[in-house]
Length: 118
Image (tube, rainbow, N blue to C red; front, top):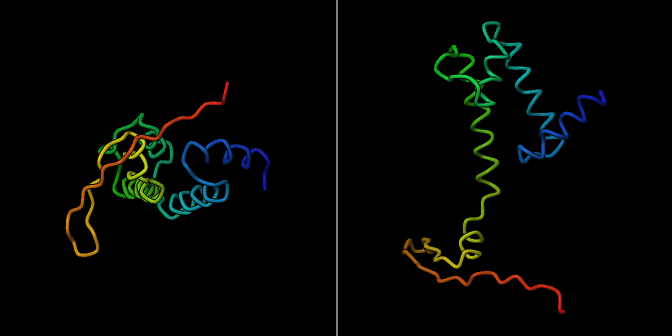
C-alpha cells in the first residue's frame, strides 16, 4: 500500500476514533460509492463532512453518502460511550432501568486522583 496513503489514514484515524484498518476501509467505501454515483461531486461531499459546506445544497446521492458517513461515526461513538463512567467520575447519579424495567438511581462517588507520595 502507498506509504503516503497509509500515513494520511493513520493521521486521520485517531481523530475519527478508528483504527488504521477501519479508516482505510471507510475511505474505500466512500470511494466505491463515489464511483457508483456519477452525479456526485467529491469536493462538495468533503466540504459538508468538514463543516465547510451546506448539506441542503447536495444532490440526493451526495446526501446519502454524507448520511452514511454520519451514521458510521454515530455508531462508533455510541459503541465507545460509557456515560456511567463519565457520570461516576463527576460524582453524579446514574439513572437506568433494571432487568424488570424499573427505574433505579445509583449514587456515584467522584473518582479521586491520587498523586505520588511526597
